[in-house]
Length: 162
Image (cartoon, rainbow, N blue to C red; front, side, top):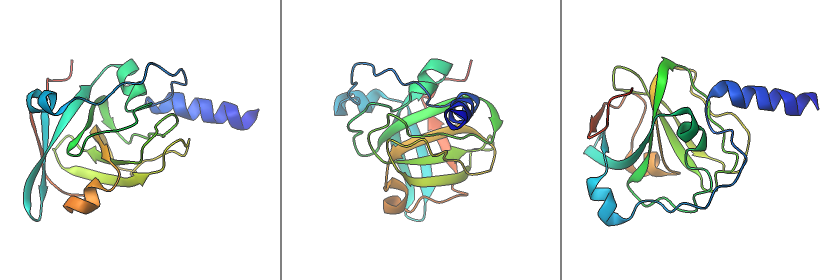
């Protein structure tokens, strides 16, 4: 019982992904919708790459994240606009696919990356560095595109945090 209580407290204190109620399964945006989506650009040794993103900024949408999704198209992801810059932790409960998590600092650099986070677990994922944004993409994306900590980041079409 204490272990479950500790997990619940940790999940609630992280401000990320702790909702257990399964919503209707949502599909990721279609290719035509992706062209109109906001973009996150990441610097790589081969040049800049773009990720089309869904942007989430409310507590409820941040908590839900990519849970229950069965697929995220290549070069798409979800950008979390956090309410303050600090070390953030995420877990993968009810997340069905492996994800790479890029923690982005206020100075628009990648503070750290969690690669291939295992789905359906409550293990906390974090990088021990402060971030203001978190970008989630398909597991293996960072390795495939050689995205690493320290990469510069820029946004296009991302609304300001309210």
